[in-house]
Image 1: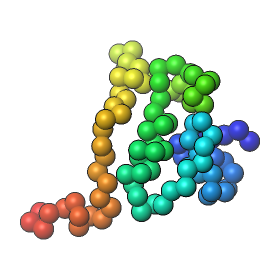
Image 2: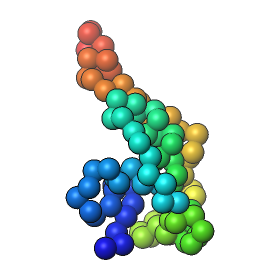
Image 3: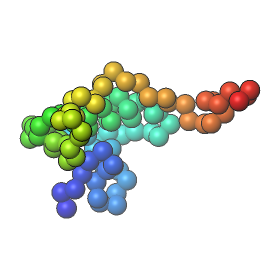
Length: 93
């Protein structure tokens, strides 16, 4: 099976779930969302066309108004890394 991607490999082996497009398996702790985002997730950000050297394919979906994957890609975006609702929701909600 050659299926692989951001959501892991179809191997039922959790060890290879964090395989980057270049084939490097990253040893991550799920306690570090920042590390997973920076050293794994961003490597799977799609380009406008397939590049065999990167190990990533092109986007599978079409977008409205002819926009491409690059239009939506923002490598500088920092997601919210807090894990628990009480860390995000203020007491006076």
